[in-house]
Image (tube, rainbow, N blue to C red; front, side, top):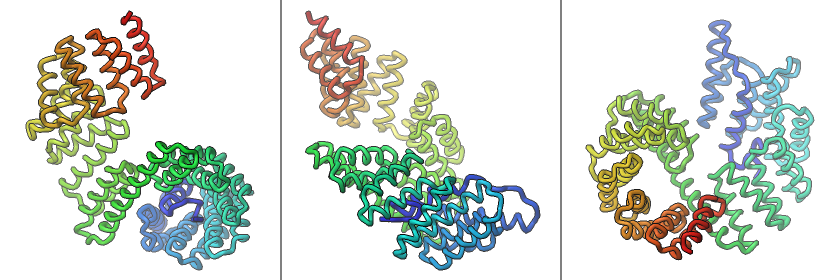
Length: 488
């Protein structure tokens, strides 16, 4: 499927457009009229980010006239299917900038206009014209080269000119190695040539760059089946199904936001943002949380936004930022067990064990039956070599969540560390491997405990399983040598 700027989906196309259309944003206000016009341009840009194209058009038509304004106006019209108006706006962008000094803004606007006109020509079946417009972008050698090559590749593919299509996609990737859609379409082309291993490589690069693209996993599963790699085919298919289900859930809540009245919009946005967060769509979640403030400034809603931004920061490895957001949420009155637990986890991630302990205990004061909180307390007390406190919290956690492998492993490690209850430790560690059979560290701990009680054959079996699961871990191989030496 050929789309604007070479993106498989319209949302990706819009994000790429905004990325390279935002190279320079002039913020010099020369007078009242210019200030109003500039504000209109910024409001139009914000509307584009929300895919509110009607509002974007309204703002851009009252903004200062220049190439980048006309280019974005053309894009907004094209997304609504108003191609005649889009063509006029794109042509205005080209005419406006043709005699101007070619700054980054003018180069961007001209490339955008050419790409936009190429997209419309393609949509209307004027393929030779589309090729000519994309080729102009390439010849300019400035902005939009990856998109131009990618779109050329899609046209060639549609015509059955596979080798030319492959070359075009490879050129797109050479210009932008992180161009996920180019990798994806290259995989499609290799599949058409039945070069399954090359296709697998292309699809794997695609999902590494865009882990939430369902079709890439579907095609990857198909290629693995062609190479008789059934386990990998099943794994990819499971991921495809999960992503399709996630997309369906997201779409449902997007529609709820769209139909919500103004006084209900904040709640709908908060729900949508948390759905994005659930599925690890962090950019979309951040953008949606930030939209809440346009419809509500209540302390309750603001606190929910802070808590959501905190979770994103924590998931992305920014514990200091997460701590700031959680503390702001608490200051606004969001004092729940979940918030205190998450704040404790952020402190723990930030290597601040004392503050982590305080927050976990505050969580338990609100709800004493939190197995994950109890497990993390057990981990902290283990690190502090506080045997009795660690054992107590692990045992309480196991009673509440008897299927959680982490807690069994934690208690087994505690006993091994202190040479206490070693027979029980072995059973706990063995049970952890049963609950989580793909965890190399659990097999390593089990091996260590077998070694401690003199069961060298069992220790070797367990460490060999750890090596099988994590063959690049040198510590496991060192452990194997020690076991074989100790067993003699």
